[in-house]
Image (cartoon, rainbow, N blue to C red; front, side, top):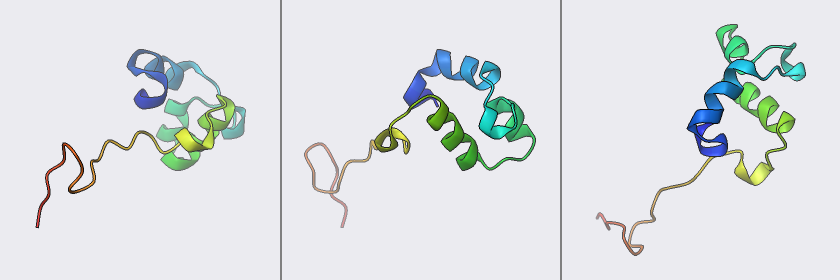
Length: 73
């Protein structure tokens, strides 16, 4: 959530934004009730119009041998 919405807004969103798809619960409530994190994230992304290409978060890995990466045998 921090990657997509920023650290400050993500916490507020998790506590305050009610998701109809999750039975009118917030992210915090749904997770506390045992909902799968992936299902909660998908519901939030749908509700907040997060495009599919951004739903997996940032990929900060560097390929081996790439500029700035370390090649390991």
